[in-house]
Every structure is written in structure tokens, then in C-alpha cells.
Image 1 (cartoon, one colour):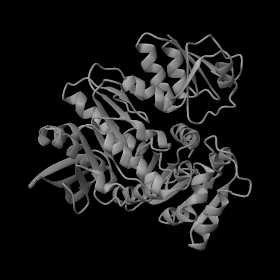
Image 2 (image 1 turned 120 degrees about the vertical axis):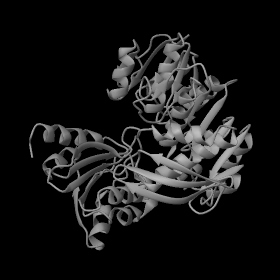
Image 3 (image 1 turned 180 degrees about the vertical axis):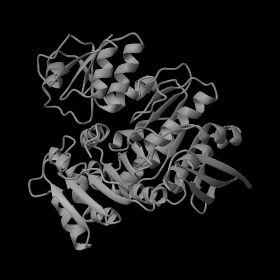
Image 4 (image 1 turned 135 degrees about the vertical axis):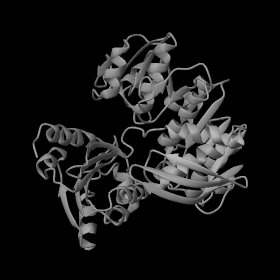
Amino acid sequence: MRIHFVGIGGIGMSSLALHCKISGNDVYGSDIYDNEQTEILKKVGIHVFIGHDYDNWLNPDLVVHTPAVHSDNPEIIRARRENVKVVSRSEFLRQILDGMTQFAVTGSDGKTTTTAMIAHCLKTFGEDPTVFLGGVHRSLEFGNYRSGKGPIVYELDESQPEFSSFCPDYLIITNARGDHLENYNNDEKFYRSCFEELSSKTRRIVITFADDKNTSHLGDYTFGKTHGTCKLVNRVVKDLYQVATIGLDGKQYQLILRLPGEHNVLNAMAVLTLFWAAGYDPNKVLEALRDFVSTRRRFDITILNKEQKTYVVDDYAHTPDEIKSLLAAAEEIFPEQKKIVIFQPHRYSRLLREDGNFAKALKDADEIYVTEVYSAFEKIIPQLSARVIVEGLENYGKKATYFPKLEDLLNAFHPQENTVYLFVGAGDIIKISQKFVENYKKGDH
């Protein structure tokens, strides 16, 4: 079968394209920009058109499109004129999953890390999983995808109501904070009902966060800070790793994790609870988690100069709660260092909905630089600017600077001793971070 992927360079779409190519299909696609994922696709023989065009056409049998692509896309228009079937990314993934044992992770925060943890544990157990990850992990052969003969592990994107149509065997819901409420007609009841529908369709076990008001009641078992099936008893931070005492089924276990932050302990607890409920030995799960390393751009330390006490951290945090968790983790690991945040907001709809919460979350940093919103293919709202975050920070008495152009950030600051630089956001802020690191390694500081 020849399959055309519209938006093939996206983290979710590229993993599907890789799966189809490895499964023996003829695969090609298009995207607006070249990126790291399109380069990986090209290396395995997948042709990628840059830009969307009516003539990007190699007579496919099926067209798969990302949620960011709409019906007025020229390739979608051509598919319909040529009577070629068009399906969404979610619908196509469901077809791949049909008949397979499935481990799914959904929720507002922590999906990628939790999914990667499940995959890592299954690999350690010798179960050879296929993995679709919404990020990049060094243990996966293609970063965001692994081909296997065992169960399928996948990150289930809750940004669209379609996610409720999946039927996994095992499900973790990390939390549900209405981060994409605009896609649910701003109807919180409808939003919650989609999680309820997904839970009801899950065939074996549902694990939820005991402290989440929207989904805690949906779990067969729960994990939480102070209550739940699996409880956090104690946590000690030791440099770049942490040790937690976990209460589960009347027993206590020790979790050693090479990731910072309480939020990552909770992610690990969700995984421990799931495998325990599925009949695995908790000690084997904990042993596997001890070797787990971070996914890319999740407290990803790219400069670690202990002599000068200069550090650079990349992080995908793009909601106020994620930023709070990031800064809390940075304070635990680097308590004596100055914290400088370089932040790129993600989506105008999120900035509008959060209404001041970004400034509230960022105020714990010592110094903040904010660049303009990364639209993520949303329509620009002319009257809305990331400048509002800086204004909010100034009201808190914080040192904050607004840069309308991303590239202008490169000349805004230079590496200093005794400082942690946190490059934060889900857009292309990574480009500035990479250049900053490159300059630092060249000695430009």
C-alpha cells in the first residue's frame, strides 16, 4: 500500500510513517518545514515534500493527516478529487492497534515520560514492545518509535475528543486540567465525559491520579501524594537523582530515580501501580525504573559545568503547572544558583485561557526572558501578545524582558558562572538553546 502523510514531520505522524515503512508499505509525505524528524524519515527512504501543494502527489492508496491540517489543505483537496480515502492520525493509529495488546497513557502532564517508562520496563522484562512516543528517547531506535513483536505502548493525545474512541487494555490517566478545552467547545462537562468514555472502553486496568478532581474516580487503582492505592511516603533529593519511599498494598518500597522533581516520582508511581495491578513483581519494576533516563527536552541538561557552576536545561514545559514543577525541580537540584528562564509560550488559545497564570508560575525564577507565542498552526490573535506575561511579571516585581523575535534572544544574555539557564517551551525555542550551547562550547562566554 502507498500511504501519503500530510504533516509527516510531526512527532506523532513521523512515528506512524516509520511504522508503515518498516511494515513494508510505500510511504511518503509532506510538511511545512524540514526538521529532525523529516531527516530521520529521509534516511530510511521516505520521500518528504517540503511545503503543502496540490502537486505533492504520488498516487497513494490512502491519505493520513495530522490534526493541524484542515480540509482546505491542497493535498486533502486533491485526495478527495481523486477519490482517495482520507483518515485522521487518530483513526489510522486505531487501525494499527486493532487486535494488539495495548498500553496507553493520556492526560495533561507527564504523558511522554510515563509512556517512555512503560516501554523501558517492558523492554527490560523482555517483552519486545512496539512504541509510539510523543517525544524523543535515546533508548528507542528512531527516537520516537520502536518496532517490536510484543504489546504496543503509545502516548494518547487528549487534545482532541477523538481520543475517547480508543480501547486500550491498560490505561494511565496522569491528570486532566482542561489544557485543550477550546477543542471541547469550552465545555468542561464534555471534556470530562471523554475521559469517562475512554475509561469505560479500557478492557483491563485503569490507573488514575488520586489528587485529580476530574479523573481520580475513574481508576481501578490510584496513585497520589498522600492517598491512593500507591502513596508517596517520603522523598529525598540527592544531586541529580532522588530516592522515594512508596507505600503500595500495605508494603513499602524504595524507588531510586535518575530524574529530578516530585512530578517524575509521581509518573514512576503511576507505572509501578499499573504493573503491580497487572501482576508484575514490584521489585522488578523498581529495578527497571532505576535505569531509566529522561526523555529529550524533559529536564534535559545540555551543559553541566560543575567547576563554574554553569548549567543549561532544555524543557518542553508549556503549561503553568508544568513550569511550576520545572522550577521546583531546578531549585531542589541547584539551590544556590541563579535561575534564568527563557520562555516561549505555546498557542494563543492557551495564553488567552490561562489569563495571568504564566506570570504567576514564572515569578519563582530570578530573571525571565519571554519571546512571542509559537502559534502551532493556530490563527494569530493580533491583540494578544506574550508581552502580557512580562507585564504580569513586572507587577510581581520580577526582572523580565520581552523579545518579539526569537533570534533576538541570542544577544540578550551570555553564560555566567553560578547560573542555571532554563530554555522552556514546546515550540522552536530549542533552536536558541542549541545555538547558546554551541557558542558556549566554542568558548564564546
